Amino acid sequence: MMSVREFNANASKALALVEAGETLDITKDGKVIAELRPKTANKLDDPEFRASYERAVAGLKKGVPGMTGPATYEERTEG
Image (tube, rainbow, N blue to C red):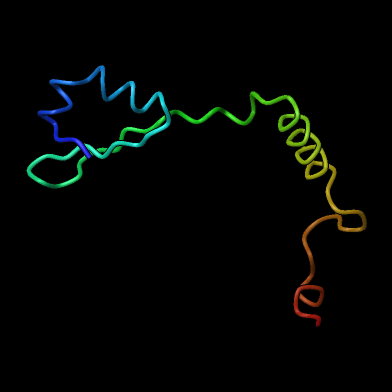
């Protein structure tokens, strides 16, 4: 935890802590007003995740076999 005043005086130190993986709460008048944390990687930049994502999207676009158009009332209420 670090106050706004401390953060202003020690911004480089705060950023070094975040770069090292820490998450800092920034406070003002004793209340947390912000959270400073490491940026997470964009999963779509990961080739393996991207390929899996593209396969899932392609499957959704194809649809479910045998399901063409909206379900009837009877189909929705069976069961």
